[in-house]
Image 1 (tube, rainbow, N blue to C red):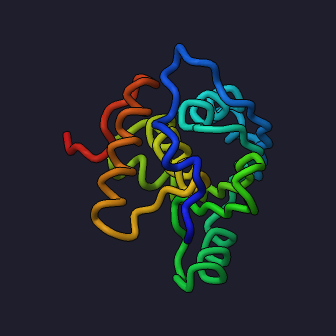
Image 2 (image 1 turned 135 degrees about the vertical axis):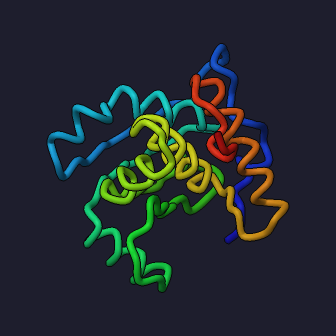
Image 3 (image 1 turned 90 degrees about the horizontal axis):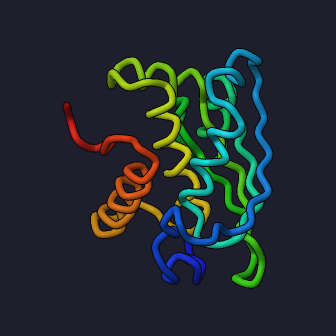
Length: 166
């Protein structure tokens, strides 16, 4: 994947800087999830990782839909925690993407890692937003860069390093 110019621009803005414009849609299949991961929380997490204006959709899916999407688009026959589908066609337009979070996997992983749902969801939202802006982890160098950004962004949001074992 060719990385957009915004990737090389700068790191995501510190919280005191002017925030890029954001249009955010959130789709919840289960109304109970709406109470656990609120739209304002999600917006705050997305905004913290943005480099430039964006039009994003966060869609929560169940394990069946997560597995289907992962199989169709990545050739992997299992539900995964987060998938990002970028649609930006040129550097002159806002970042556009769908970020799909599998709520079943998200909840299972949070419990296994002894994290709150909010801690794990914040990490995966930030991860998905970085993917939408051209970051990836296909090689060790890119993975290290992306992980460092995630750690910095999550720290600004008040969350612990997700890659550090307790």
